[in-house]
Length: 293
Image (tube, helix red, strand yellow):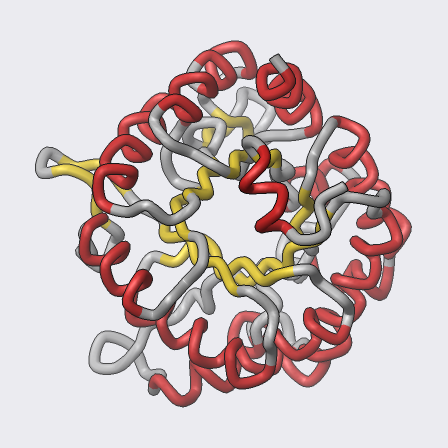
């Protein structure tokens, strides 16, 4: 049985979980509520979602702490509870974790920008992430995943902040859009720039998640693999969010079309795969079948 996530990465393709936010909404999370609040208010729901992903075949689940940094929590008036909510996020995931599986402490973006574009300093970003990392570490996450980063500058602040308060391995994934010149973050960071800087920071694994669907992600992985030998993490969206006729948010890429590109994503160099927005345990179950083949 693998003792660390690195042991498992050496053995085979690692399966992460799928969307958390979309699952919480299914269970009734009210619009505008900070999902992290449910770690304290409805921990049984969060645990049920983690369990559903482990049951579907996930080797790793991500904690319900995507928006758990102090700056993001401030938009819900929860910044003073940053440590508590992250500690609980990791604890709940661990309660659902079977032997031989892993918990990743999810650390998403602040939703704000650094000066001169925004009003925040690098020190403020680092402090916001440091507090979050402390909670996730004390809650016994196996490693941290700084994810969905649209600005390389912020990703590096998150990394420095997390390292101030945690000795856990820290992985970093960026989020890219495709334009006629290739794949770039919304801040204009190229794939090669992100990978080179993250490698220079001795990040043990990197990759991409969110924004693009599985067909585009297959192309992106190929480019990333040509640039780095690090383990690559890949979590595509189930396409773009669209409003259904009844006013519900649905995603443009269905299950069959989504999983069709998973073998190509693996062939192109992904070491850890999972789903992002719009994916659910059904997607993960199908991916588990493909990995097991």
